[in-house]
Image (cartoon, rainbow over all chains, first blue to last red; front, side, top):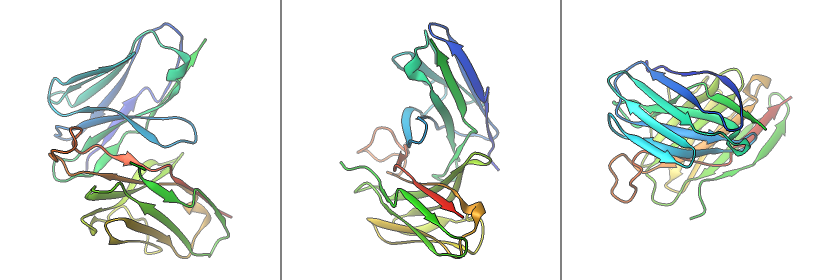
Length: 111
Length: 120
């Protein structure tokens, strides 16, 4: 059974600071996704990482994938309040199309 | 595109009542997923369909839960009878299959706004 673990689960940081969220998974996979969820809202796709070494950047967020280490990172640069949300990584099982989600990282960026 | 459409957005019902949640996927998407989100258990995959056929329903918690997809543009998730522990947000999501040329974000899920269910 595929397990996906994120850490930290809760992150409080000051505006302007940098931080990284980690996503580890337990079995082989070549596809990893990052989603953002605002309170009471749906999940919004941020990044799709489809191969080892893939790196994607959008604004202050950068995601990377190391399939050999079974690890993805979501790096936040110079955080701003608007980034406050819960971030989920999701891993696709190689045997099919189902995604398994991590527990989510609740990020709070304080002024 | 209108995106994935779910109804109702909010449902409050009493224990023992039947609940039906509805989903209209994005046109052209072959895959449809039902997820449940709770504080305790996070996001759980309940069932998914490919071309209207259920592929994996191992996440459906009990026989009280059933899902159907009678055609490519409509799916239902039914709970009968409902119990307080079924209270959650139920999300529907759809996607193209991996490798579909029309969508460079292969396998990416597009989520609906969710149906918040409260069973008293």
